[in-house]
Length: 411
Image (cartoon, rainbow, N blue to C red; front, side):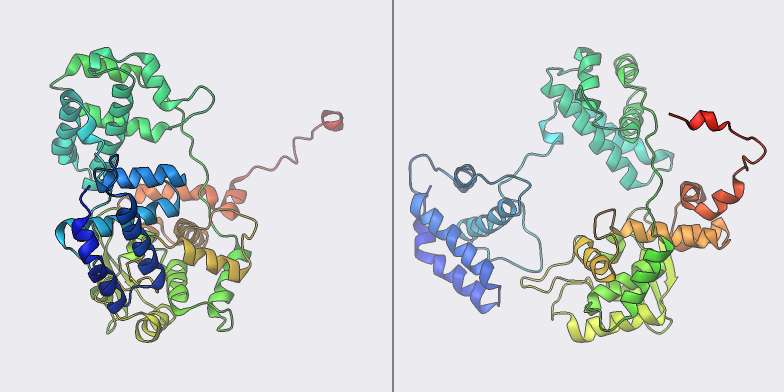
């Protein structure tokens, strides 16, 4: 590995980070990566930055799911790009992941690739959303990768045992009915061209019972505490936390739609939020009440760091980035409200389910509720009925006329 250029020019990278107000931690860790490259980059066993990355990961014991693994990959990737192309880090665009990882698709053989590609080309012809087709293709790619790793390089070489191991590990179920259905639908796209081998594989796919659970929602007491917390100016919540809290509480937007909000989505004159939903790709227009509007305005004018990033919600620490998820903000809201301290679901979906179940419990028409939360199909609302406890109680049958012998409960 040639470190001549890095040795002569690394100070330019460090000076750039300092002059552009990157945080001290980022500068320090970038310097550590530079020093690592200078110290062992010229050794015989290190021939590239990729070799250096895996050498240090093994030496330090980093795991792929750990934050320190991801941070090291980011900082060393910045050093690599500066050394090899002269490119400086940028807050305006995301860089390619380092080290480069082969996609699952590129690891499949020609037959498996053909089936996946076929589904991507024709899967949407029956009215499916593009995102749905992509999800089905991804599930099928992972399935094919498993078969290939198991020794089946053709559909005709697949055995029932190979398929079984993809869904069950011998002790518990690894993947459920929905995953299996995605694979079946993807296989259908190429069935006309490969009828016998695909039918044979479909016959091997297991029949898995639905494992649907009741949707999680907020209890009336939890809802009251969260609302009081958001209203209380002494709760120590920031404007960004209150903004997110009110949007979730009153509108039930999906987390991906909230983090994608930009200035053009906010109509201040008409007090409306207009978006194109990430899941359904359908437009959605919702009223923005005073609680949401005031907190958003206060966040943008007093709390949001100066940045050219298009999204409204950005990280506070430099380098600033758009939020990827809202879990940290929602966790803090729950903590300040004293709700679910001992555990339980606390993501954006809980608020969304709460809004739907609350509206249904107040007798709001199903079609109206679907339009508020942006369901692509009114049928989606049916799953929320299981959480409408009060109306379910009204449907129950009294057992008063069917006395049970006291002996039945004796031990």
